[in-house]
Length: 244
Ligand code: F6R
Image (tube, rainbow, N blue to C red; front, side, top):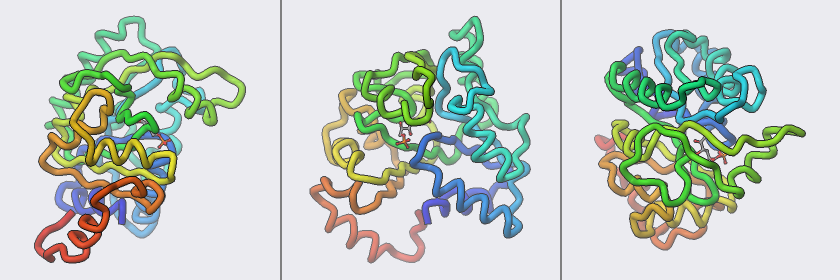
């Protein structure tokens, strides 16, 4: 079900531009896409842009987003590596990397579907609390909480302190945002993002400014939503002409 927006968009455009998140949250989507590929769906023309990458982490480090995207998307889906873009966090000139990344997204015609996870602190991409709601791709410093949360992917090595991330303004330009969250650890951030005030304190709340957002949650991640009965009945009675 969570892969549906991607598969539907791909059916309409084999050269779909997909914005991809890394981490735990999108994995069920990537597994479903891999199953679709095994069943015959062609992903060879799909283009991808990652949300972010750590600064100073070589692309062959298993926790680098270059490596994650290669493992979880490029190989299982048979993507064309020339069409899979991840910011180069090892470059000497990171400001140029950020500007070039923005230009590459524009040159591709913009991102059609952007997959998003959410950090426990409400970040999307690596836009940590107090990020400008108008921000563009740039260098950010990770919070201690995000570095702790991501330590599980690093084994004995230290989690980098900085990253290159698409900005909130960049993310808002994607034509469809699909935010996925699972588990009680996300409940507070999800409630703040969906029902709280739009505020840089919870960067994910910027999704409220976007005209087309799909939020996919399990019960635990939805637990702190005040209007969950309304969302359930809205979904149950969704007219058949209204797609995700
Ligand atoms: C990763 C990203 C982050 C994660 C978020 C949640 O590319 O942009 O915003 O989506 O940190 O991570 P997980 O899904 O591992 O809980």
